[in-house]
Length: 480
Image 1 (tube, rainbow, N blue to C red):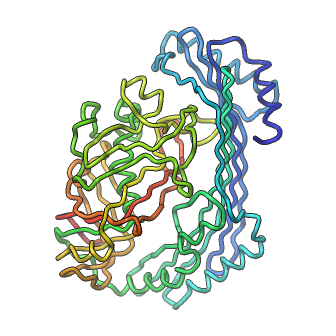
Image 2 (cartoon, one colour):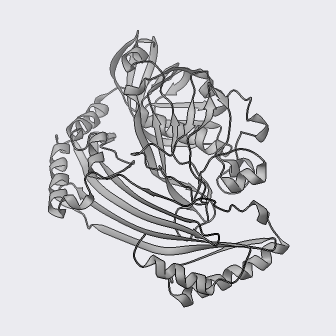
Image 3 (tube, one colour):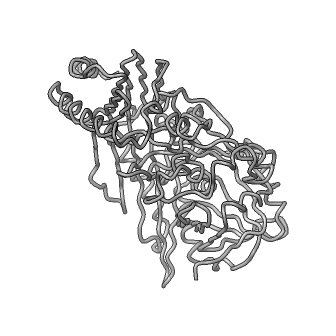
């Protein structure tokens, strides 16, 4: 726990009145980003934030408030605001006060770090990004190129009036690079090195993204895509690589299974879900090869933790097993509202937001097929990698996704590249076409640092691990 937090806790205890239950969530975040674009060092950024979130439950009411004024007077003002809302909630409660979670167990969690951010000097980090820039500029047709390296440190403490204290410390690294190639009227971008994703840990995690070693290949693929033919319009088998499976899992399993969305909370903003409460326990979401877990215990995955932001201990659970839908992504509050079992996934993006149902580590469990066996199983199809675009309807059912890179598969063998590969489907039937799942050696850990949801909006990090997967008879099309 940061050294000054105990005084904040003591000041809060001095100003909070006697209520049935209170909690104080303290958050401190620091983020730093370095970028070199076209060989020019961009202005570095350093962002810092610190504040507290207050919850009060008393006599049938529940209310919240937040402040970054961490003085006794600032805390008193926040408590006064919460008490005002507490009175309103007694008359117009949307969620029953008895449904508010009360953590029962104290504990700690901290990211395992082998090589801390400070182990490399600023000059050393910038030299590495310059080296990557030189590797990306392999030809004059590369018209834009850049490399980035970021880190984020988040400290969270949850203290309750019942004497529970939960302390968690997280450290993420966000690397990546991209190259844009142009020739005549054709422009293509290829990214790599973890671009758009991140991992929990220190600088040792860069190697898992092949950072910086894949930089030249990324640039060469951007050039090759400019010269490649357009992806054909066809119905064929689809082999999705792990970095695209990330988005497929995120949009057509993760969001539809959020319990607050199923209960209607997001309907006027981010949409509803085609999933209904009666489906759990019997609905065939996918083929028997589909096994999806909520797993907060995968150390390098970005949303690993020991407790969610409501203070519920986090444990691995199957959401879908052998294709059958078992449980939703619902934290303790939503579980109480719906009378259903869920998982510890109530999460808040910062000190000034309440915890709501969010994806965390949502993983597709590996099967038994090697990657070459998946390719060999396809007579006519397309391999696609790295998301470029996405669109999905407001019930998280009909979708259309585009990828950076495509490669034809003919008679079980990989052929040449195709550009602008896209595919579309319907969540309720797409996963039933799952016909092949890669083995543990092919599984990769990905995720996104910017999943949006909630009003006011909350951008939060989400982890997804998956092997490559084969889907039968998918509608595939190009970009022209």
